[in-house]
Structures are given as structure tokens and as C-alpha cells.
Image 1 (spheres, helix red, strand yellow):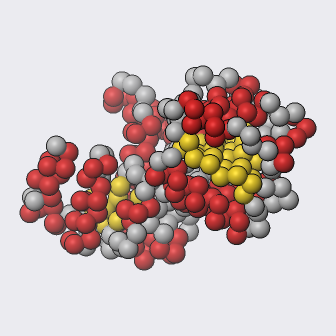
Image 2: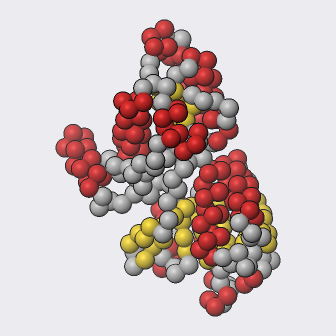
Image 3: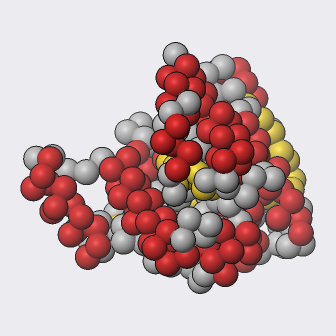
Length: 295
């Protein structure tokens, strides 16, 4: 039904005269809109997807988010610098496309930095046996860090249980998605562990003046605080609207040469050298229940 509706919208003649298109919200129509953007040479920005395949070989399609592959590459570069490459890494991921893309890019970047992967495993978090098997028999004391790519709420407890079995002196660091911070089944003492880090593309500082100003205006108009989607929508329109104003509707080359720009709410957006997904991926940790931006 979503695809049928999108097709009817794309058939409207006035759409071909637009300077930029944003969407779709639903995954099913993403490739359809990407093809339309390319055929009509209108820049399209996908607000939610992390699938780098959507923007491959398409000069008119951008992802607002960092792709899963970009997150994996930048997380691995952080890990190599922060944890060193003297000891290998353990890499686990949920067996879905985004997490497999993340893991492939992570391994490639970590090995390019001189590191080695001790073990790389997939799991299905809704299958208890699969999840248990992924964490079983790992030589965690020999690893510099454990990276787990999964937003599933069952992955966090399994990872912390595995780490708790390792004496603190030889316990590896943990690098996981920022979504784990919203998992009510995880204790703040676990989330704020000394060597627990989060790759967190949606991280923002709630004290940032730009966010506080936006929040107040949103509250005044809507009588409720902005959601995560509202924050992202505001940032997307502000950034790409400025790109339109500065470079015109064919802003690809201008965006490719522009320096990274700090966000009004989030940490920033950057599309250097022809990248078509955001190249800013904050790495954070919790310290005394407060966020600390480490990259």
C-alpha cells in the first residue's frame, strides 16, 4: 500500500519541478524514490535509512544518517586508536543486513589499521540458543575489545553477562550501539562501566543552545517536547536547506568540498569527497551518569 501511494505521488507532474525531495519514511519505497530522483535529476534525501546500497552509483540520492558501513568503519578506526591493535578484537553481530554491513566494514577497517579479529560471529537474538552460542567459548581475556552490532534488547544482557565472567584485570572493552542506552533491562552501573563505549549517530547534547532553542519553540507550538524524529527532521531541513541556498539544487560538488558543519542539535553533518551518507559518527561513554563525547 505504501508503494502504491508513493507511485501515485511520483506521477504528479509538479513533482518533477521540485528542487529537492525528502523521503520516504517507509523502507518499501526507498528504491522507487531513488530511481525517480536519478531519472529526473532531483536530489533526494532519505531521512531514516542506513543502507549504503541505496546511494551507490546514484549522484542524486543522499542518506541523512551515516550508513551502517560508515558506522562500522569509523567505529573500527576509533577502536584501533583507543584500544590498540596489540590484542585482537571479537566481533559479534545480529544476522540482518545493516549489522552485517557494519561488521564487514568494521573488520576491513580494523585489519587495515593493523588489527586482527579473533572471532567473528552472527546471531539471531530472538533465538535463545543462537544468542547463547554466539557468546559461548569466546577467549575474551585475550581480546582488546568486544564489538556487538545489534539494537535488539536481548543482546545487551547477554554481552554484559559474558563480560562479567571475565576478571576485571583482563576484561576487554565493550563497543556497542547507542540504542543500548535506552534498554531498561540494563543497569546504569553496567552502561556506565569504565570501558564501555557507544557508537551513537543520534547522540546530541541536550544543553546545546541550538537544541534548547528548538525545544522551546517546539514546546510552545506543539505543547509537547520534540521526539527524536522531530529533532532529526529539523536538522535535516536546516542542513540541506542551507545547501540549497548556498549551492543551488545541484549541490553535490559544493557539498563534497564543504568542511564538516556542526549541527544545531546533533554533532554535525559531513559529506566530503562525494560521500552520500553522513560521515559524522559520535563515540560516547557514560561517566557519572553524564555523557562524555570521546570522538
